[in-house]
Length: 223
Image 1 (cartoon, rainbow, N blue to C red):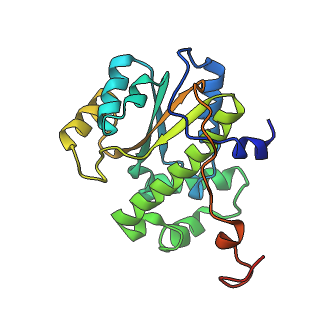
Image 2 (cartoon, rainbow, N blue to C red):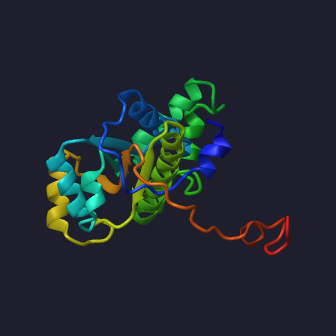
């Protein structure tokens, strides 16, 4: 499918046919997340595929009891690894870029500049910025996954309403789900993606006019 067609064909799908998701299609969606751009190659993501009905029911409970989550053939738990931003791990990611010839820096520049300048080093900015950058990186990843889902003939919904460490709600349930998924302490479960063969054809949601969100040179100047 043409990329533009896949983007324009995106819909949030909450009803799915009672058929399994083909394994190769599922892997293609997950691979799209793996290939997403990442700040300094940190890649602070991990995706857990849930297909067991009891587990999906528990995830639905965490997602404010949204029934479609439990009924989806596949639910992908999107986790953010906050520890990925720690300087030793950040350095590993930067060294991989240098060794691959992607970034022309040496270890001295990485140590003295990239890991000490708050513009480059996320860890220098504290927990709030680390969490914000993690959300940013995961959003890019599941944005790629959504486009690939359409390309594979699948439907996806990005579940926004859920209890987590960020909302601070239903923490006992959240910790129970983390244990069920064996999510390490330094990872957050940040969102859920439901996936399956679409069982509905919703209309496109309205979007703001092009000129209201794009400017040329200065805010408000039309392109």
